Length: 103
Length: 288
Image 1 (cartoon, rainbow over the protein chains, first blue to last red):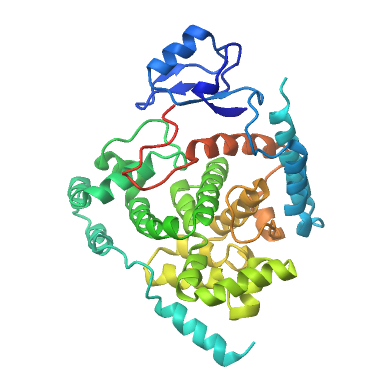
Image 2 (cartoon, rainbow over the protein chains, first blue to last red; image 1 turned 90 degrees about the vertical axis):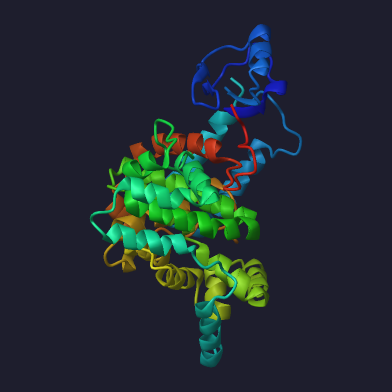
C-alpha cells in the first residue's frame, strides 16, 4: 500500500485504508474504488492524503525495490548467525516486495 | 580505558545540566497519588492548570502508539482509562521529548517507532499495562540524547569511530567513554524517580538477560528496538540491527506464524504516527 496526496489520486485506485475525518468518523471504507466524483467530494471535505493499494505513484527520489532490499541485507549483516532474526529479515523483505508489486 | 577519564565522563553525565528538570507538577502528582483520598477530578484539575501540558497529554494519549479504539477527549477519562502511573510517565515523556525532538529528529523517529512496536508486542502478549511498555520504548535511548548534549565532542568521536570501524554505536560508546547510553539512560531515569518498570527496560535494552524484576518489559523493548531497526524506520546512530538475546527471545515465545500479522499491524500503526510531534502548534499531518 502507498500513502499519497489526494491530488495524486486517480480514478480506479483502490483504498487500502479507510478515510477518517478529524473526529474519527469513517468517510469512506477500505476497498472502495476511487472515481472522479468521489475524489472531488473528498477534496471538498479537506482530505489531504489517502492510502491506496499497490504502489501506483512513483515518487521522485524514492529508492527502488532493489535498493531497499539491499539496505535490509546490510542492516542485518551483523546478525546473520541468529536464526530468528534471519527469519524476521526474510519476512520484512517479503512484505516489502509484496507492497511494491503493482498488482 | 583510562579509569580517570571514565570517572570524569561519569561525573559529567551524572550531573547532567542541559537536560530539562521535570516540571514540578510531576512531584505534586506523585504526592497526590500516594494519598488514597485523591480523586480523579482533583488530579485532572491539577493537570489542566497547565494548558500546554494538558493538550500534549491528550495528543499523546490519542496517538497511534496507545491505540485506544475511541478518542479520549477529557483528562478525567484519560486518567481513569490509563491509570495514574501511565499518566505520570506520559507527563515525563512529554517533557523529555520536547528536548529529544529538537535535538535529533531521526532518533526521535526511531524512538516513536520503537514505542509503536512495544505497544503492538505488549498487546499481543497480553501484558497488563501496555502503555507503560510503550513509554519505556519511547525513552529507551534517552542516554544518547544526554551524551550528545553533555559531551558533544565525544559524541562526534563516537559517531566517527562507529563509521570507521563499522561497529555499533554502543560498542563505540564503550570504547570512547567506558560506558554506554543504556547505563546513562538508567541513571537519568532513576534521577527522575521513574518506576522500575521504565528504569530496567532502559538499562537493559541491549542486555535484557540482566533484568531482575522487569524481565518481560525489558525483553519487549529489546526486541522492539531490533525490529524497528530491521524495518529501517528512523535512525538510531548506526545502521546495524543489534543482536538478539536468546533468553529474551524465549521469554517472548513468539511463533514464526506471529511475525507476518505483527509486521502488518506495526506497518499500519507506523503510518499513523508518521510526522507525529508533540508540538501542539503544528497541525497534525495527514488529517485523513
